Picture: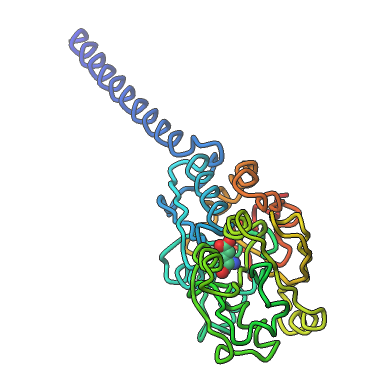
Length: 339
Ligand code: GLU
């Protein structure tokens, strides 16, 4: 009898040990799984619930500055934020980008700070409030460059009257800026022959004599103007000081900027103009932890931004809130609060 009960006890012990073994194996699997989801260099200790795996970063024309910087940000995200793949894609720029983020068609976008503000206010080109996105950081001044060929008769904004003028892409911040600058000089589209086109097409058409001038709101040097300046002498039309004061008074997101003669090849003058600021916006649908990790990854790998375009050098933690025109996303807020 004793032998039988000892046998039964041993059996029970055996079953118990096997069960324990299984449990601890399951435990290990679970641990491995957790380690896998947090193994990127930026996602340790993050709660990845609700993270969006495929991220779209909206930029602008390929010949602008948003595009190389947005593609660089997407590469940083894909490489350094575990389990997330990001793609930078070209677009009509600021106004389109704000609308698309609001519609849930993308997660991040580069836009001008003035346009982000108008979107949240439902003013200027936005007939109603366009929101659902917040700020991450501002980057660099986007210089409004009114470009023409050096031998053109256009010397002032007023000289644009009666001319064929590229005012930016449909839905661009450039067009919004063109409108405000023209309006400050009492010029409307009735007074010019306006053409909508991206930066690359504007340069080609200027070179070919199909248009007389082009508005370009972008960081300098802008790729499309560099290309034009490589084969033609160019001129950038200055805005008069009194008009600059008047415009900044009305639209406080502009700041005054000077372009020097080293900005482009075959540009041997200086120009006085104005600039809004570029910024990264992010969909409010993205969880705080994910945005925190993405912003952190971008600042941890800032060299890739600097390599993508000279203006990438303007991105610094200290200046990242200058000109911020809308509330920060909680994930970005947490990152900057920790600095
Ligand atoms: N700021 C420009 C716009 O929204 C785009 C600039 C760029 O593509 O670099 O129209």
